[in-house]
Image (cartoon, rainbow, N blue to C red; front, top):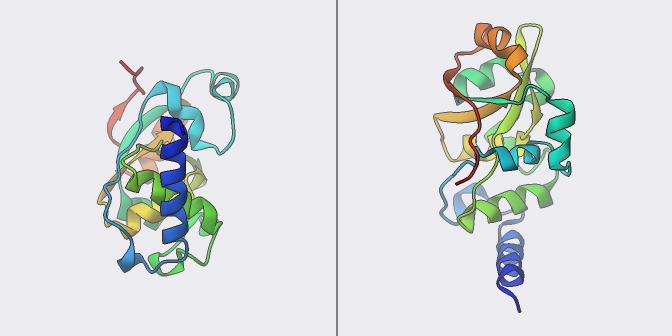
Amino acid sequence: MSYKNSKLEEERCIMDSVLGLPVGDWPEFDIKWDESVESLHHYEDGVSPKFIEEHHPDGLLIADVNLSELDAKLTFNSRQTVCEFWDIGRDDKKARLIAHWVSGNIVTPCKITPYESEIVIVGGNHRLAVSRIKNELEVPVLFEPKHEIEIGQIIQLKNIRKPQTRT
């Protein structure tokens, strides 16, 4: 069995073990983010790297935001409480995300966009849900440069930066 296949099998076993598991019984893990240019396309499930070039010709920016402040400004359909974790969305995707972090991997931040005086999560609802459960105070978010001022009027954007190329 190749190294890649063994890592996938390890993640699959973790997925099976955490699926539907009460939050307090999850294995320990740290949330680590992948802010690289090469991984930006992962904010939107199943799209290719070409998607970023085609749909975001000006690229994307990253900023750190206070998770409580972000939660308070989310549109209704972007909200999710800790108690609703296994009740909303796809359990298999949530289990895969947890397994990915348990295995020590890094994950692309969610992408947000403004909508009137609120924020919509464009991609990454599960990532934010797990961050809430893990009591993260701040999380990085992706957004389009053209929305920086508007988002900044809704929530505080800290440490605004461009994604970096992996070295």
